[in-house]
Length: 95
Image (cartoon, rainbow, N blue to C red; front, side, top):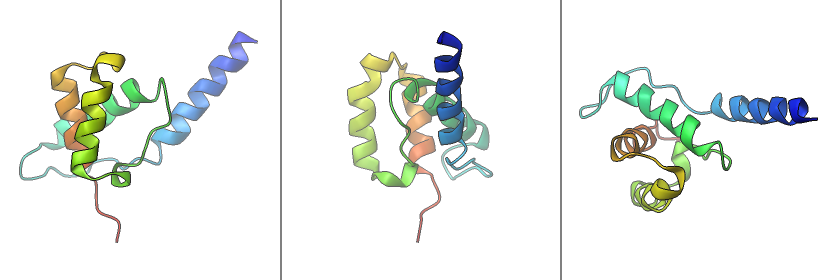
């Protein structure tokens, strides 16, 4: 039974993470490496407790509020919080 739960967890984790955009170029303020690290930190730290929200779901202020609220619970370092934030706010805008 534990194996089934384990497989289900990873299926959900990876099925959600594939819908998130994958950075393909840097921005004026953030390198491609940092954006990819931010994506990985978002998937690794946030999906273990709840569904991942698409970056365009919230505006910059709401993302920062969410990260500030969740930082202690998720045990996210300041450096990881910054990477996650940069990843989330630099998502391509949906028109």
